[in-house]
Length: 214
Image 1 (cartoon, rainbow, N blue to C red):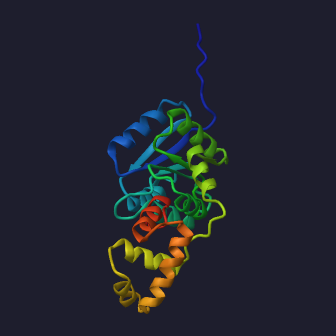
Image 2: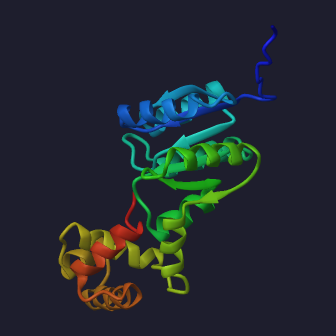
């Protein structure tokens, strides 16, 4: 008796980039159950992800954002600059509308959180390989919640990054070669844009939304 064996038309070759070994192991196990998927490599940081991408040329790259040496956003940028057609899925712990918007603008095709089900991860990989985009529902809700809000500009981000280090307005001004009054004006604009009560609250909001990522 001859048994028909399912053979997919094309195997999706996948690279996983995450600095947590157990996370990589879990994602690999989830994907390799599927007959049309094969994990061809694993990277433990952004620099390794870039190197392995060029070596392996996977069909889909799953990449975390917070990684040592080179973070995920830089890795996405370098990979997409070298290969504009590269298919990259962000798989991260962190939502945040500014973070999501930046990742997508740099070339990520989909955005998942690590709490995603196995089914959602598999479907997203398969869809991405076919040219479809997917953003997790929780992420979409976060983006919509801040839609229409004015983003922080480069000058305001410079002030807020130093405030996050605990520097006073005077110290921020000295670092940026600004008057203390100018720093106060920019901080006032930051509080208004983030709907924050004070500078500590502003830093907390900015971190959560992804404005202060490296």
